[in-house]
Image (tube, rainbow, N blue to C red; front, side, top):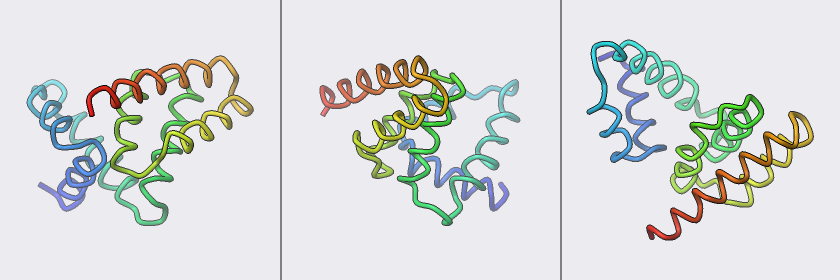
Length: 126
């Protein structure tokens, strides 16, 4: 395992939690293993591992970018990650305000809906 791969796995576990990463690793097959390695090394071992900005700021950026580009499937996962990165519900709402102005109200509205549902689920689980 490369240094970026190891660092990426550590950051991935810090942000997403062991349970999530363990499930993803258990579901990995030879078909998607190269993709999983790519995101672990590139996204987690390079981008998320950089100390240029905080994990809180990365959560806000990631959520805004997912919403702005209409990639809604990963929003609940990244909302759950906020509990570990320090991004508050208010931070998330502010990020989605930017999405509304710069990328469109419908995308921000859908992202807010997903965030509300996920935060409610998290509260019920606690």
